[in-house]
Every structure is written in C-alpha cells, then in structure tokens.
Amino acid sequence: MSFAFTITCRDPHSRARLGLLTTPHGSIETPNFIFCGTKASVKGLSPLQLHETGTNIILSNTYHLMLSPGADLIAEMGGLHRFIGWDGPMFTDSGGFQIFSLGHGSIADESFS
Image 1 (cartoon, rainbow, N blue to C red):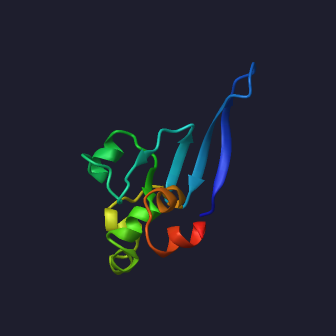
Image 2 (image 1 turned 45 degrees about the horizontal axis):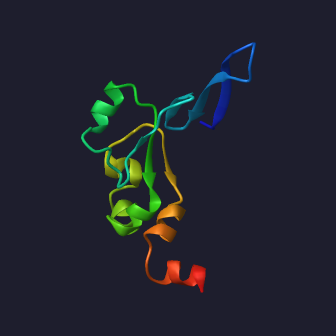
C-alpha cells in the first residue's frame, strides 16, 4: 500500500478543508490532534485505550528515543511499532529542538563552535 491524500470536504467560503491521509499503517483524518508519546509511550493510556478513543496517529521524539531505550533495543524488539504495541500510523520528529535545548556533548558543542 502506498501513501495518498484525499480531500473529503471543502468549505466553499474559505480555504478550509477536511482530508484523509492513507498510510501503510492506516488512515488519518485531517486536521488531527496528535498525541505525543515522547519516549514511545502516551502517558496514562495503553495502545488499546488510544484506539478506543479514536486516536488515528501518535508521535514519538527521536532525541528521547535515542537516549532511552536506544536504537539497538528498539531494533531488537522488531521496530518502533512492535516495541510500543501500536499498529496504527505514527511519526517521529527529528528531535532537533531537544538536541539544541537539552543536548550536551559533541552534537550541541559542535553546532555552536
């Protein structure tokens, strides 16, 4: 399955629209409120509960995932979807903000030297 975006409704008086983004892991209604699972976990809710609430997609933060649990453990567990037990769409942000605001060591130091 490939990715696709379909506009499902347009407001004739503005540029507002609703859409459906189709991914290999499921469809996402747009616009959408996206839950943030910073370390691959939405605090206080299980993946089943997220599905029950109608959640279409979740977000994880790459910087925090690299710090803990780390890429090796996530790979050993079969990838991020299996690691967190979520079969729906997800995305990770770059972690760029966290690297510069929270980071320490070579990445943050090299960027400003």
